[in-house]
Image (cartoon, rainbow, N blue to C red):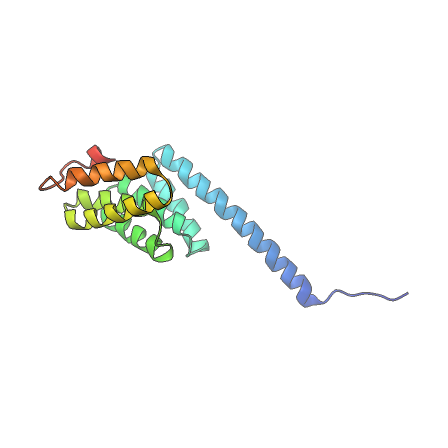
Length: 157
């Protein structure tokens, strides 16, 4: 009877792949937990969870986007913009990111950047056949193009 042995490199590859699968599952769980914390208004907890996802996968645009939203909620606008910028550097067709970044620019009274982002968001929402957000974006764009400054962020959030 012939004995078969499994090469050590094959076992290492199987272990590596199983660990990647576990890491992916863990990332999803942490993302969901962060979103749940955000819903419960535990924004610092949400930021911590999204940061953990980013540490495990620095190329997760969704984690940067969600952390940016949480940063808005704690009034850390510069960090929110930084996260939105990084998310867009990873995936440049995320309409929601442009939309949220535009709202931050409005809070910071940077109308020109807000208008640029809203135009891009509208184009992307239309391309993605998301007519509700397309219409909402166009409405906000029309409103801010006729105002000298935007003082009340809550009006647009």
